[in-house]
Image 1 (cartoon, helix red, strand yellow):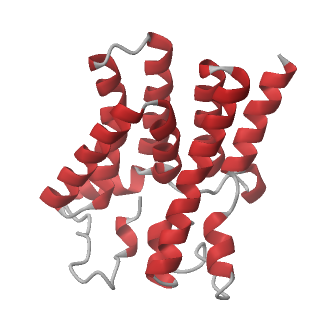
Image 2 (image 1 turned 180 degrees about the vertical axis):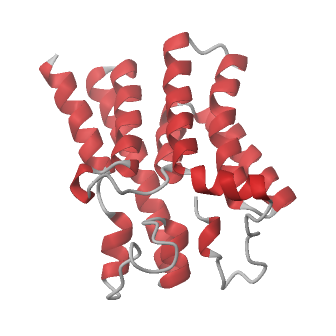
Length: 204
C-alpha cells in the first residue's frame, strides 16, 4: 500500500514540473504573466517562440508518459493508470503553484499514449479533424478527451479503465470552462492562419 501511495504521489509531483516556466524563464519571460497567462505550450510559442513551445509540448507529454510507464512497470496496470491520472492532476492543479496550472491536454496525451495507444491514436485523429473543420484548438482538445472513454467502450475496456479516462476527460474539460463559455457565445477565436501568430485565447 505504501509503495503504491509513493508511486502515485511521485506521479503527481512529476505532473507539477513547471516545464513552461523553466523553458520561458531561460529567455527571461514568465508565461503566467504574459499572453493568455496559461503555462502551456501554445502560450510559450506565442510569447517566446515556436521552438520553445515545442519543447514545452514534448516536456508536458513526457510527464504523463513517464508517470504512467513507471507506474505500470513497478505496480501493474491499475497503478499505472492511477499514476497517469495523478500526473494530469499535478499539471492542472500543482500544489507548488497554488493549484494554478495548465489545461492538461498534453500531459493527458502522454498518459493515454502509453496506457491506451490505439485509443490515443484514434482520439488524436479526432483532434486533427476538429481543428481542420473549425480552426479552433479548444473544441478539438475537448473532443479528444471526450473521445477517449467512448473509444474505450468500443474496444471493450473494463469499467475501471473507462472511469479513469472519463475522469481525465472531466478534468481537462473543467480547465476549458472559459473556452466553453466563449464557444457558446460564438466568439471563440480561430487559430491564426499565420503560423508565426498564435491567438492566446486558443490555448489548450
